[in-house]
Amino acid sequence: MQENELRTEITIDAPPEVVWAVLTDFARYPEWTELIEYVSGEAREGAAVRTRAAWGSPAEREFEGRITAVEAPGLLASEGGDPDLFFGQHRWELSARDGGTLLVNREQWTGPLADSVYAQSRELLVGEFEAFNVALKAEAERRI
Image (cartoon, rainbow, N blue to C red; front, side, top):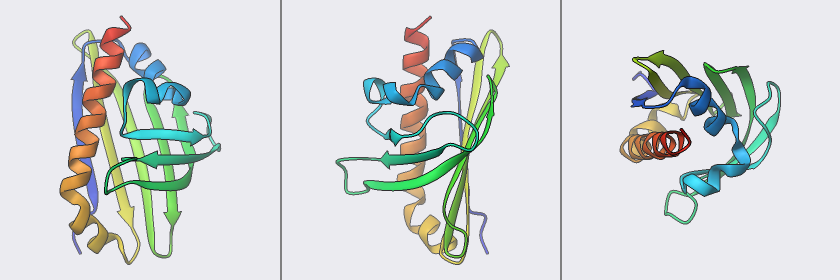
C-alpha cells in the first residue's frame, strides 16, 4: 500500500495572523482564487462545510465535510468523504518563519479507493495545491 498523503509548502512574506485572516475568510475566496470555493460553512470547529474545487475545469468536484480544528493562527483542519470508501483529512499549518509564514498544505486519504484515486489524481492535485499556495501567498502579501 502506498502512502496517500500530499504535502506542499510555501513561504509567505506576511505574518501568520495575516495569512490566517485570508485562509479563514471563506466568503472572500472567490476574490483571490479560482481553485476552491466554500459554498457554505465557516472556519469554526465542528462546522459543516460544502466545498467546490477546480470549478469549470475537467476536474471540478463538490463535496461536503466538516472543520475539525481551528487553532489561530496556526492550524485549520477539515475532513470529508466516506470512511468506508474514500476519506480525506486536510490540514493547513502556519508557522512563523523569518518575519513571514511557512504554510504547509497537506491532505491524507484513507479507505479502499484511496490508493487508486490518489495514483490517478496525484499530478493534478499537486498542481492544485501549489496553485492555491501561490494564490494565498499573493493575497496575504497584498494585504500587508
